[in-house]
Length: 69
Image 1 (tube, one colour):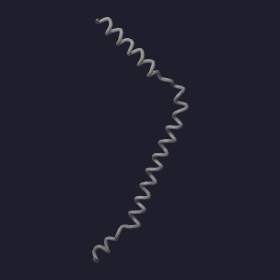
Image 2 (image 1 turned 45 degrees about the vertical axis):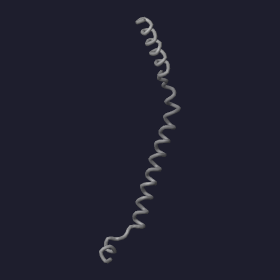
Image 3 (image 1 turned 180 degrees about the vertical axis):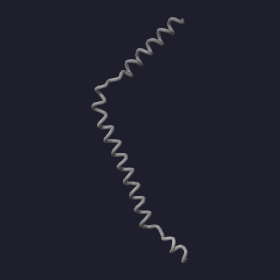
Image 4 (image 1 turned 90 degrees about the vertical axis):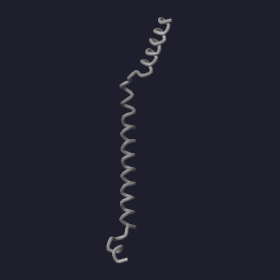
């Protein structure tokens, strides 16, 4: 029974090792896509921040207007 369990564990580790094999050449293909995607995310976040700032400036009331009312 114990030998069977050990065999199953060894087979699972062998399968996991094959599945998680590091392939260095794949980084040459995926890294540029990753960098472009991350830059796109930061660009969109920056546009949202600038739009929020501009809308806040355009539609906010001055503090002097609040004091007079």
